[in-house]
Length: 176
Length: 420
Image (tube, rainbow over all chains, first blue to last red; front, side, top):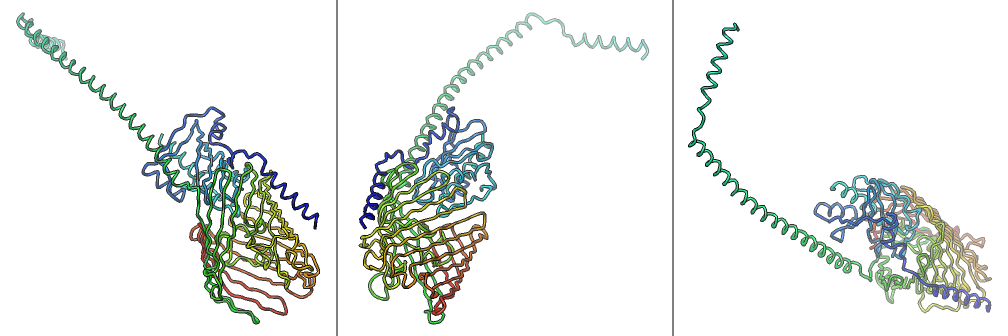
C-alpha cells in the first residue's frame, strides 16, 4: 500500500513537472509569413487579391459547402507557382492551411495552425501527401482521400480548401 | 495600226492636252488664290488652337479621373478590410456550442424468458460547450440527458450527466496536458461516439460491457504526438467501484459523482496513424482497487485493449479486443476475474451517403469459470448519411445468450442521429 502511494505521488509529480516545461507558441505549426517565405525561397512576390465578385461567389460556395465569409482572397504568385493561405472550420475551430499550386496541380498542402480538440492526425505529412499532384475534376478533387476515424470534419476541411485553391488558381490564370 | 493612223491619234491627243491646259493665270487670279489659301491656313490655325485647348482640358480630365479611380480603389480596399475584420470577429467567437442526439426505435423479441423491447426512446441529447481562453488554453465540456426524462420514478428512466469538462493546455506544438473530467483513452467509440461516426443504432455490446463505454473519469492526462506517426496518452484518474455481487465492469463506473477516490486508476495508450486510413492502438488500464477498498476479497485489476480501424477507399474494417484481469478470490470464485470481449466489423460504402456493415461480437463477464456465460451477437445493417452530420440507421441483431439461460433479444433497430 505504501509503495503504491509512493508511485502515485511520483506519477502526479511528473505530470506537474511537465506543466512547468516552457510553453512556446500555441498549436501553431508555422506562421503564415514563414510559410510564404519558405515557399518562395525568401524571394516573396508582392501579394495580389481575388475579389469575390458575382459569378465567383456561388462557385466557391459550392466547393466549400457554405458561403465564403470575406470579400477577397489574397495570394502570392511567381511564374507557375501560386500560394494560398486559407482558413476553414473543422468541427468547432478554424484550421489554417497553406496550399501551393504548381501548373494546375497541388505541390503541397500544410496545416499552419490546428485548434481543434481532436483529429490532429491530419497534420502528419503522410496524410497530407495524399493530396500531392491532385487536380481539379469538375469543381471537385480528382481523388478519394483516406480519412482518419474521429477526424472526418478536419479531413473535409482540408479537402475543401485544396479544391478551392485549385479552382482559384485556374480562375486567376484564366482572367489574366 | 498603220503608221499614218498612229500619228493621227498622237496629234489629236496632243491637241486635247493643250486645250485643257488653261492659259497661264493672271495676277488677279493668283491673288485670289493666295487669299483663299491664307484664309484656309487661318482657319486651320484656329482649329489647331481650339484642339490644343480641348486637348488640355481632356488631359486635366483624365488626370482627375485617374485620381478618382485611385481614391475609389483605396476606399474599396479600406471597406474590404473593415468588413472582413468585422465579419471575422463576429464569426470566430471564442465560445463554441455543439451537440449530438439520437432517437432510437427498438423492436426486439425476447427469447426464453428475456423481455421484449418495443420502444421509441430519445436515447441521448448532448450539448457541447467549448471556450478558448487563449491560444494555449481551452475548455471543453459535454452535458448529456439520457432517455429524455430524468428524476425519481419508473416513468423517468433518464439521467442527466456531465460526461466531459476539462481544461487543455498546450505545453508546446506536440504535447498537451488536460485536467478535469474526460473520457478514458481506450477503445474505438469511447472517445468518438457521435451517432454519425459509427455503424449500428446502439453502441456495440463489447465496448459497452467490457471497456466499459462510455467511460469517463476525473483526473489529469498528458497527451502528445511522437515521431513516426505515434501518439500517446497517459492519465491518472479516479477509479472504478464494481459491485461485489458480480464484479461486472460496467457497473463500476462512478461517473465522477462524489466518486470514491481511495484508490486511483492509471491509463496509458499508444496509437499509430502513420498510414492514412489506418489506426492501430493499444491501451492499458490499471485499477489500484476495483471496489475502492470495500471488498477485501477483491483487489487490483488490469485491462488490456487493442484495436484496428482501417478505411481504404470504400472498404472499412474495425476490430477490437479487450480483456480485464481482476485480482482476489471474490472475483475468481464466480469466474469474473477474467472479463473479455472482442468484435470484428467489416463495412462497405456504397457511395458517399450509404454504408453497409456487418459485425460479429463476443463478450463474457465471467470468462474464467467453466459455466458458460458467453454472449455472441451478429449485427447487419445500413447507415444513410443524409448529410455528413446527420444519419439514419437500420440494423438487425441476432443475439446468442449463454447455454443455460439462453435469454436473448433478437430483432431490428432504427435510429436517427445528428451532430453539429
